[in-house]
Image (tube, rainbow, N blue to C red; front, side):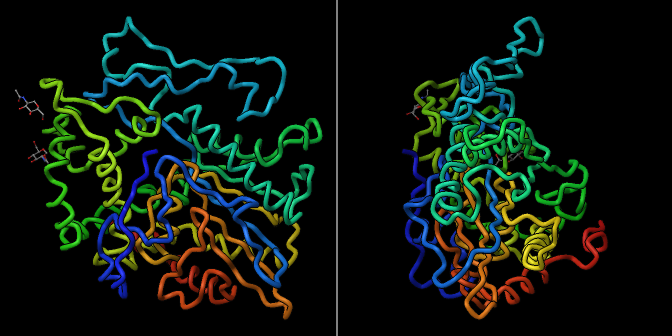
Length: 434
Ligand SMILES: *[C@@H]1O[C@H](CO)[C@@H](O)[C@H](O)[C@H]1NC(C)=O
Ligand SMILES: *[C@@H]1O[C@H](CO)[C@@H](O)[C@H](O)[C@H]1NC(C)=O
């Protein structure tokens, strides 16, 4: 397996500054694998002692996908999508006997722009067959806990108990469908029952990092690039960056050449495709270790500014802060018995969506959300009628950010809610003005 193995977090990890080793994860995540998220299941899950579960809010990253852009040097054959049985199979669950449609990405050989696209049957950023299976499996794992073990959700689908939201991207919508098929296979559904999947339009989507919502994002992120943390990282990865740039044919393209381009390597590593070699020297290839390093370092510009940048608090407000108020708001609605509220919420989102929530609630050294990674918020009622929140990421209880001043094994709801609400910008448009 292609485990992004990273050394155990330093024992001297006392303050945020001391932990400023990019790519070094807390040791609780030692089983982290970029290719495969870890979700809790009935074998690993432990109920909150002495408590009654009242609400579950699950965030899931979409499953395995192909790269989100086409590099000139990408000579791989991405034949990873469009399993021909897709329209009637989901995971290993038979949905109907006969497919009614079959989608196919064409290879337009007669187009003069033919070379702008890689080979294979996947469009840019498309969920692969592997990704479909992964998200279906998340649904099965979640069922094993909240249906079979806890009976928090009924055995047969009751659409009134479930709220689903996915982003506008096709891969998150498809991932949501597969997860729901794992959670409620057709045998456990009344024929004809329909789950509503809600999506914000792209222009106003607030669960991603959005320049639509916050035009100031680039200028808020930029000062991070002048910090010793980033400069050290850049220096120690420069040679690898140049090597990957040259192999990808983007050595002189300033739009892409400041990244380790890990997004390019992930699909190959996770799907056992050969790693690329230089077009002018066929023995000059990217090794698995280099590819792994490139992947581990590629999201620094996304997660760095909200953990180690000079404007950390401000950056968190205009990224994760745009959404996190929804979490306590919906918890309270359920506890109050608001009829429009649902006890089970499921958000099918992106890596960035999950990471920017993690940046707010967690100690900084958390691994980047893997494919089908999950983040779960559980709200439970104790014997004295007070409420606590537990948070589980990649199957582990999240280590709370020091400012949160509670344990995320059981954080008092009021403490938790006030902390998140503090990150909601009072006037986002003013904070985001350029
Ligand atoms: C990226 O391209 C620009 C423009 O050609 C060049 O000046 C710069 O050194 C390149 N950066 C890297 C890391 O290769
Ligand atoms: C080709 O790459 C190999 C491995 O990096 C290197 O040892 C060799 O010198 C290169 N050959 C040329 C002609 O540059």
